[in-house]
Length: 287
Image (cartoon, rainbow, N blue to C red; front, side, top):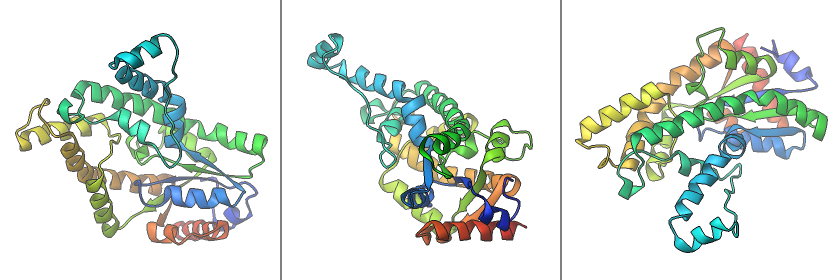
């Protein structure tokens, strides 16, 4: 790790971290706290995915839908209107909408093959956005004068790496310039995340083998076909299984490549000093 102990971390003139864990446990909260201090550059992997690597896919999907409306079709064909997404750190709806969900088209579902094609696009985009971290850390320092850098990673980071492989190219690259920090939740957090997701299910990225197995099992259990399956029902059914699938992968990432902090401690971070102390304690615990 780039900070071998707590003292090295505290004394470092340039602190660089990557936060990972399930969405909803505090990655963006603490990143925002650090950004607001004026000393940290906040790099959002999801934002980078949605703007740089999937922005064209998202805009084309909007245009495809707009072309079904005669008036908008005429305006688009004559370059009279411009359609784009307005993704922000706090609003990733355009990306989620494009990723979509498989199932009944009358309920907003996609054919499963098309859904998997978009999942594959997301995988490539996520890897590229993660590997951009080092360049953005340098850019933040050289161009804007930020001494510190926080990478707010996607919840699906554990799906695109092999945490038990010491030669994993993505983790080797990330850990060479960033301290990887797992925000670990409890069973109570898991229950809370499931309830929140049940109220408003959103598309996510999963490993292809996991997704195909989940889809086949869901169809068997519900007696559905691809054309009749409930898209939101599938997302809800899959999410609880995804939490169990991802937890050991996050743990392996922290065990081999970084440190662990708790979601409760992250929620208590109110300023840059709190965060510095939190990471110092995590390094001491690991030692």
